[in-house]
Each structure stands twice: as structure tokens, then as C-alpha cells.
Amino acid sequence: MTLKTLTAASAAQLDKDLMSESMGFSIDQLMELAGLSVASAVYKVHPPSLGTTILLACGPGNNGGDGLVAARHLYHFGYAPRVFYPKPTNQPIFGGLVKQLKALDIPFVDTDGFEAALGEADLVVDALFGFSFKPPVRKPFDTVIQQIIDSKKEVLSVDVPSCWHVEEGPPKQGDLGSQFKPSYLISLTAPKPCVEHFKGQRHFVGGRFLGKKFAEGYGLDVPEYKGVEQIAELQVGARVEKL
Image (cartoon, rainbow, N blue to C red; front, side, top):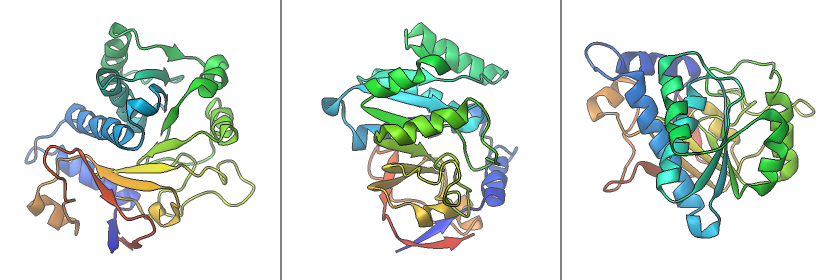
């Protein structure tokens, strides 16, 4: 099996094309579908019977927005999500997502309380940085990432494991994040080249909005989603092809 992967530039262009006048998607729609797929992946690898406390670490960009959406869906799936979102983005869509979570009494964790919340978590969702991440990792995220690594908790990373380069994979040995090895990964729209370095247990793709004709324009295959599933499982360790 060969995974067709999108570079950062191609992924950014694909999002732009989806939101063009001819395609008609909005960032709200794409984020909602992406976040739903993240929540679906959590349910697949860690159903509520295994523990309901899910800690979602959300960054300031769209990757963090996907995490905020996922938190709402997880609440309705029967989980007890907790959200770490230390650098809120000053845009209406993000403000709306935060209001939705607070209306459900979903607790927010600050930097000082992160380590304690981490200790109580049954699973961590890493939605800190996406495919546009560029080092260095700034505070408080440097400390948070190291705490996640040290905790040895199972982690589901969203699109790209935090600290990883979208194309080259984890940082070099000794640098922050070089030991960040999530158990699960959900790629959004399509895998990114860094999946070549992912050695975790399960890998999914989500974001069910590509039509066959549109996907072919990028050289992509539409994943084989089954029925109402929002995610499709991919082979860990498959050969990677960059598009």
C-alpha cells in the first residue's frame, strides 16, 4: 500500500481551493468536519468503557480549533473532556467554539493545572500545532509537550504530531519533541509526508468532504469511508508518496 501525502504547500492550497467561490466551503464547515473526525477517532481507539476523561491540548491555530470542535462532540459521545487552550485566537469562529464548550460546562485547564489534569487523563488529544508549524516551540507549549512525553500517556495527534516537521518528521535527537511518539494519528483530508516516521498503533484519515473529481486534481484517492463513518483506517508503515 502507498499513502499519497500532501506537503504543507499542497495542503494549504487544497484548503484555499475548497473555500473558493466554485467549491463554496467555509472554514467553519471544514473545522467542524475535521473536529468530528477527531472525536470519531477517539471513540474508535478509546471507547468510553476504557475511561471517559479526555484532555485536549489545543494550540492557537486551526489545529487547535479542530480540538475545540472535537471536545464538544466528545461531550455528546459520553466523555468528560477537559480543554487546555492557553492562547485563544481573537477570531469569531474560535470565540464561538469556546462559548459552546463553556455552555456545556466543559472545564478549561490553565498552564499551572495542566500537569495535574494530565495525570488524571485517560487519553490525550494533541491538537497543538498543524502542518504550518515552524520552530521554535514557545512557552507554555514547550513545557506542556515535555510533560506529555514524560507522562507516557496514550496520545492521539491531530494531523501532525506536535513539534514534528510536516515533511521531515520528528526533531533531531536531543531536541524538544524528538521523543514525542503518539500512539495514534488522525490525518486530516490526506496524510502528510511525516507519517513515514509514525510508528504508533493506529493511523486514520478524516475530514470527509473531498469529491472524487476534486481529489483527482491533487492526485489523491478518496478514502474508503464506510457507511456513516467519519474516519478510515490506514496502514501504519505504508510507503509514502509526496504530492
